[in-house]
Amino acid sequence: MSEEFGPTFITVTDEDGQEIVLEFVDALEYQGQMYQAFFPAETEDEETDDPDNGLVILKVIHEDGEDMLSTLDSEEELDAVYELFIESLFEDEQ
Image (tube, rainbow, N blue to C red):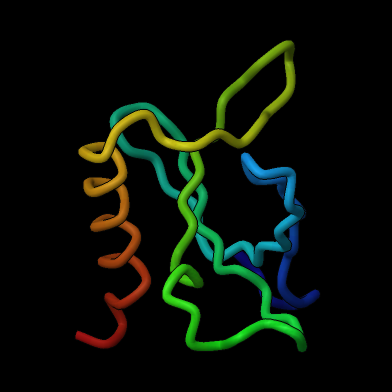
């Protein structure tokens, strides 16, 4: 992804109705399914040491001709895709 125009941000609503701003990090395909990784965008009133401010992984689903983001179905799916994103994000450091 080109950083020429700066980062890409999206806003999602969690299960409690809270809006969360996420910064796009990367996308990859795993077993025929597309996934996207995000980091929560930092805000001035947010504590930076919050343990929940880690990598957010969502899968891309096609519904009614549109791409939508959804949570993953299982802990196993999340673990496998998380490992792939970590490998991809830190491959330059090896």
